[in-house]
Every structure is written in C-alpha cells, then in structure tokens.
Length: 158
Image (cartoon, rainbow, N blue to C red):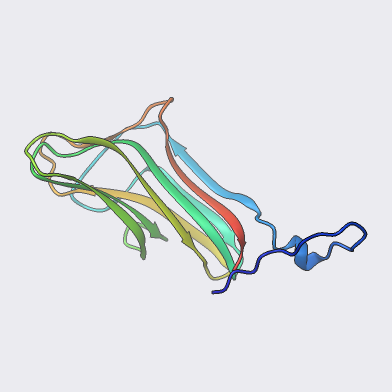
C-alpha cells in the first residue's frame, strides 16, 4: 500500500476531516506483565501478553513485543518469541530467536517490531514463547522494574 502523508498547513486555510484522519491516533492497546513465565516446548501465550483493539482498514499499526530477559535452556538450542493474531495457534506475524550454541544458559532481552495493516474490526494479538528444550528450566524473567510489554500504536493511513 502507498503511504498517504498529510499536507503542509498554511495559515488561513481550512483544516479538513481528511487531513485530521491522516494524523496518527497513538496507542490502541497495551499489555504489561511483571510475572515470570516458565517456557515450554510448545508455542504458548506468555503470561499477560494479550491485547484486543478495534482496527480501522487501511491504517498502519506498529506492534512492539518486548521481553526484558529471556533465559535459554542449558542445552544447545533456542528460545523463540512470536507475535500471533487471534491466539497461540493463529497467524504468525513475526518472530525472533535467541540461540545458544553451547550447553550453557544464555540471557538476553528479546523484542519484535512489526508494522501491519488489518481488516476493520476487532483484532486480538498475542505474544507467545517456546524453547527447543526445557533443560535447566528456561524462563522469561520479569519484575516490577522490568515489565514485558505488548503495545499497538496507530501510526497513520496506508
């Protein structure tokens, strides 16, 4: 889709509804969680990472999914976070992987940034996580000063 930027404004001109509708609308949905989540080998919605908002057709949405600290298995393998539509089995929108190539726990923050359009109506997005093995009890570490975040922002018309 082509980008539909706003026009230059000149003193004395009339501001139209079309021009107003080209402005970003800001935060549409937000979820935070300070509760740790123990990872499994199945793609499951991470604690607290579900948002629902009303999408408008032909608008761009910026989606951010952030985990402050992921601890991988203590075996060679990977930790994956996913952004999905509807539920844990829904359409995969984006994912990122933290790989450990030695039999030792790796720790890192993980984030997904995705820009997308949706059909008009109610949209549910979820942040999911999984690991290749559960050796060493891999976990998403969160606390009140390091929240996990799922954020949807309207950034303007398509």
